[in-house]
Amino acid sequence: MAIASIKEVAKLAGVSVGTVSNVLNRPDAVSPATRERVLNAMNELGFVRNESARALRSGRTRTLGLVVLDVTNPFFTDVAKGVEAVAADHGMIVTLCNSDQDGPREQRYLHHLEEQRVQGILITPVERENERLEQIIGRGTPVVLLDHRATRRNRCSVAVDDVLGGRLAAEHLLAQGHRRLGFVGGSWSISQVAERHKGAAQAVEAAARTGGQEEGGAEAPSLTLIEVPSLSFASGRHAAEWLAAMPAPERPTALFCANDLLALGLMQGLTAAGVRIPGDVALIGYDDIDYAAAAAVPLSSIRQPRQELGRVAAELLLEEIDEGERHRHRQVLFDPELVIRGSSARR
Image (cartoon, rainbow, N blue to C red; front, side):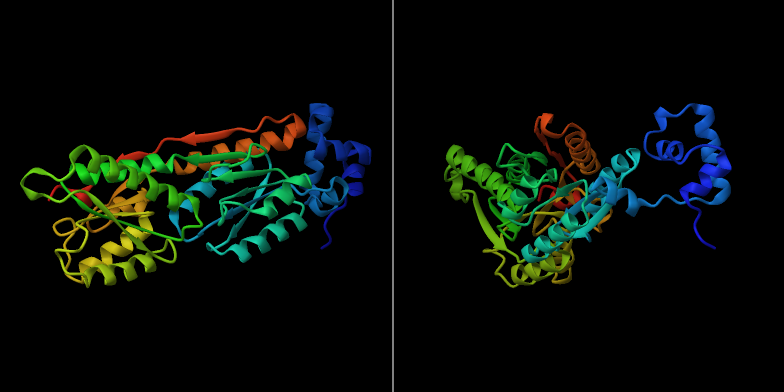
């Protein structure tokens, strides 16, 4: 059975085609009684709006693009929920793209989203600088950086203070009496990784300055870098194999991971190798995903307001779409929160 046309709806409702069009596009311009009559006709005929035709006329679809680093990471699932909730309230749909921390793949998605004439794009970029984004903005598509600070004033961004988060994690481990700390993260093109490491390094350097060589021959605080290829559970497992093979007197006694997936992979790998958490190695992650509290040893973590990040970013994007050149770009920065659980308990 063919889909009913707008002319058939107008005939059944006893109105003009223009009135039906107004009900679809400018409902406030139609009286409530007429609007109800048209909607009843649509329901009776099973009318489905032709969004492709509307997009051809307007030059834009009612779609937002969302590009994330890793769709398997529950952090980005929660961020996407926040984006989708705001989009749905405004009659929009969200196209989700997974760059998988791969620059060329990210570029292909940006090209496709621009081809599809999305109204705007939310993105957690792989690289700190992205010339493609500048080109997209220059051609008139609004872009908001998500979980990433803007380095230029011509775009909005919503992020968390990752330097502060790194500092909170390292200060907590130092307060538990640890001196040999390790930071597990990569790749360094991802700004969040670099900033979390920077914050941890600041905390260790501050502790070394104020404490120096401890009385009684205790070690001065140090931070060992353990680089991994990606922020994944598998990378955490591989890092665990390397750490478990180290002689215990040389191994860091506390590890700060750039995200919770890495930390959970590390936890599983170290436990399988007979390294006790927190008895031999204390562990703290970042993001505080739901799996963190449910781990065999509940994982300490740095909490981010995941859904709130998505909601605020989507609201900024829709504001820019509505306001156009009048829009005032804003860079929103949230503070992270330290959540202490069993994985980092005092030795």
